[in-house]
Image (cartoon, rainbow, N blue to C red; front, side):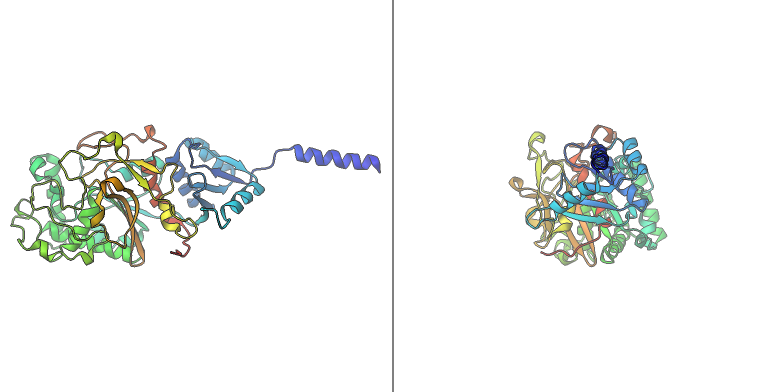
Length: 424
């Protein structure tokens, strides 16, 4: 009997001495992650393979938990992503701690990868797009759509739509004063006018207004809209100006309606109200929404230009919590045609997720429209403080841990979440 007990004891000790078999992989998103941006791409790729992903909100920078399948671990290694192996018990302990009522964390299941569209013209533009840069770097697939596809009602095929350096008012970005003779500007005008004629419009502003309305319908039907730079304010301005000619002769051949300001209907806008149109139609600004008007020098030195992310309740406000996941709470600012939004002109029902209180400006805002949502992010490129036309695009291999670019990728994964009812 004693000999049998000894053998059993040795077997137990042997089992205890063996390493626990990993059942889960934790993709940490705190300072310990080698490549934050590619981690989002890995989460997207895992979802596309039918493997469950859990987003651990506010846990180590918004980490991901996935099944420890060999092909997932191999893919993470190829992409240079930091992962940690966990046993079933270790993963259960982490989730139990996260779900404690007094802990500001939560577990969000991601269901399926969203189908992504980027609104962009077919002609070459002399600037890059931060979203397409980071989607390509993170290896997240997307389709390019433009006015034809929007007007042919192809947006419902997609879950998520991005707008970047666009002008929905029909004024070609107000580049006339500086670039009227540039080849790329003339190509842009020819392309827009050809599309307008194709669809029966006499003016590009009419075309762009109809496109803006189709995008509005996409959002109302449950779509997720994300916009940066000049797409943010020009979109709302176009909707507000429906029925008023706000384009001067440089852009549509006739004068601006002198009563246009009084005809603006802010009730049509997603984000802004009470704004004033820029009266100088040759100026590189559409309105006073932008708190840092071009071409005036920045009011804040680059070294001091930051905005603060709000901390939301993960269990009660899961949507803004997902959209603000980061390993840093203080984000370095960056400029664009539309850099930031005057706080006084943001509608009171809009959720401000990132702001510079000292400058009274919002940088990152969110809201709902119908059954869908929209997010506006000021500035052009989070890792190029003042991006100039015809500059080389940002090399994200040099910025794999960019907190500014992480905010874009939060929006990419947000539609994949199995939504919980917001409690506040």
